[in-house]
Image 1 (tube, rainbow, N blue to C red):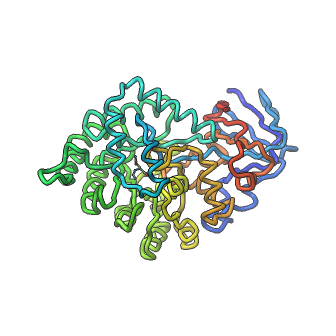
Image 2: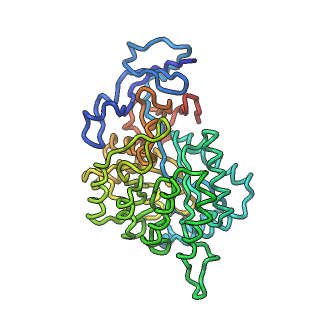
Image 3: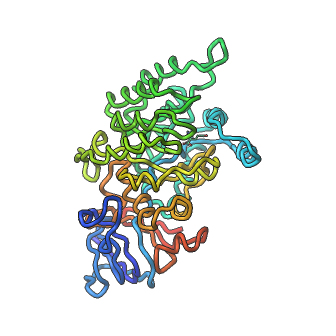
Length: 426
Ligand code: NIG
């Protein structure tokens, strides 16, 4: 057993859940942010945190020279398994065109034609980029295959990376868009026939590789009835539920997610007061322990509203009302939504900065949403904080205080990163 003492920490954001009862819901107490602190890592876990003057000795020592330390970002929404280029679509959008999900078909064609080896390299490269920006827990989705074989290939790739501890969570998003081969005689997609495939043969093939099922509940993709079929079939197969909801309009995705007890509904740009109330009401639902250490049951606890600030900027969408959601008492997470169409970035620090500057979250609220919020959206207790026993996932800022994330927007503030207790610095 080897231990490492990390000292020289000017600000240590433990966000320790054991101290939550002293905070307003969703907020952070002073005790959860220590000053002049130190910590000890042992066997990949946090073994001790406290004042620097009380630090115990350890086998190895690292002095951070007066820098702020946060839990690594928990990015609970990304689509990393893809090939192809969508820059032309992005340029057209910047010239005034609005986002429509049609580009998913472009990426699907390119992804289907990519070799497995090439796809794996692309995904690995994207993980490396994310970690270099301070992300230490990462979910990713299928959804650019849309045939049984291609969805299975994406799920197996993601699942292998979860086994290798490069990724953390894999999600089946066969219901991303109805693929072109399901166009009916009238030239319109036959979504019901495709949902039969997704909930049948495709789900059977993919389910052993993933913990989650997701659906794009939106006009032009899947309506609430079709989305409910997908989610219910996923739940019957033992998967936890996630929803892309209310991204382009009031799609009914949020209401459905709350009703079915989804762990998360993501995007949430177009919300009625009733949607916010429905999400806030789920915050009273108790979480329940899962069957593996560090994991909660996927079907208990609140439906987290996951906001995606980089996506909102890249699609010029109305920013998700994160402030209103928090004020109403909903659980909120921040994620990158890294994908080629709406958000080709895994920069969680940028998302946090945007949440503070544009969505009017306090720094503490934004940091918490990008760490503990993401962990809750993934039903994990082992990440998103630096309480004793947590995974030793550290994001060291090249700054004495975390407020620099918002104060110095766009500056490269990630100094060093530890994941599972091992340094993975940029
Ligand atoms: O989360 N909205 C659906 N899916 C992705 C975008 C996919 C794409 O355009 O390629 C998202 O934004």
